[in-house]
Length: 193
Length: 221
Image (cartoon, rainbow over all chains, first blue to last red; front, top):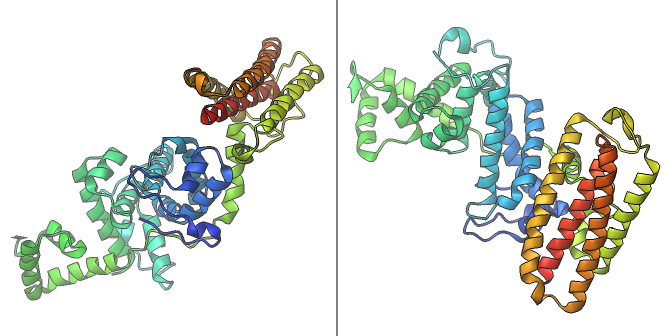
């Protein structure tokens, strides 16, 4: 699903195939080899960080969550059986960690979008309006309520279906779809598209 | 297809993300060719879709690893071990005896050197760094987890005993007795000083050594 981008020898770490076979490095990590787990971390951290960053909207929270995800992954790694790719397994784990974080966050929780109005999502004076597109998008994503942002990230960036999102977030599939559409609408306004 | 002669929201969104089936998409495209309002709206959504970032990050994350490693080590309770766990699977058999000896020696030293009664876990152990309530709970958790795992492995080993060479069987039994003796001593010390975090760490560490010994013994059979 996701290719490693960080430098170093970990770039050669192959993903597990999702066919029940587990890569030797992952297997060593499962047996308690922390150095092997570091290679797993280096191979998968960029994708996990991107997921966390876009779902929570702030870099500081994202970095904290990346740590939480990999500590949790270490604890649960023994349960990885290779039936999906390790990247998929880690993504699922990360989504759960982030959603739990958002649910317990007093600031925003998993708030959804009630209405895409100009007062909330009018962006014309956006401080990021003249910056690079990717930064614009990250800025715009951060303006969305956490629940709607999560739906958008999970569907349009990570490729999960509405049913899967419903299962992960606890909202109805129809609500997930409506929130996706509203999130897109809000983003087009925020980005002045 | 349309509501008030315009595309529905579902059709607009579907046209933007290519989720419409071919026939419906053809109808929608026909409408877009003749309706500026819908065409503008769908174009804006399509523009958004084209800006969706890849699911990767180019941020430097190397600096996060030491903290993750530290948390992993904490959960494994390795602070009193002489041998790091990541090198253990490749160690020769005689290394086991050495580790067991180290644990037993550590037990003896700790029991002798620690004052018997403590009133506050935080104030009790100057030789254990980073003591917090959560660490304390984590150590207790890891102890019970190791204990459960050790019991499961013991059962497994019983089934495989016959496949072990006599010399290995005897060696494993000896090592287990030493570790169990260390565990018993620490448990006794904990009865006298139940809030001592250093003893709890040592207990968890002893269990971990037992689990590793059993895993290796199971693997050797």
